[in-house]
Amino acid sequence: MKRIFSGGEFEAKLGYCRAVVAGGFVHVAGTCGQGDDVVAQCRDALRIIKEALEEAGVSMADVVRVTYMLPDRAEFEPCWPILAETFGDNPPAATMIECGLIDPKFRIEIEVTALV
Image (cartoon, rainbow, N blue to C red; front, top):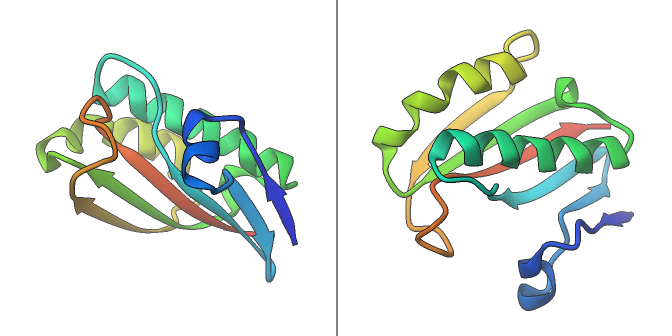
């Protein structure tokens, strides 16, 4: 098993790591990005996820499952072009959940599982 840390502020506060490589999969924790709106945060979250996957030796093309969590489901549609660009050629199984996030400034949180 391998643990991957990004140095994010919540890793130490909550006692978790960005990703864990185990059982033939890379499990990437729910990831929020920085930015002024949902689109900027979506792009940044995907960048952070991509970096964790690369450190684990895989890529976005290896993602088999993705979960999107948003406090307002109406904000999901503006992200669709980014998600289609990211996963379009290798679409994973996906779920979108409307829920509260850890801080109101966050507009989207993304969690993925990739095959090693």
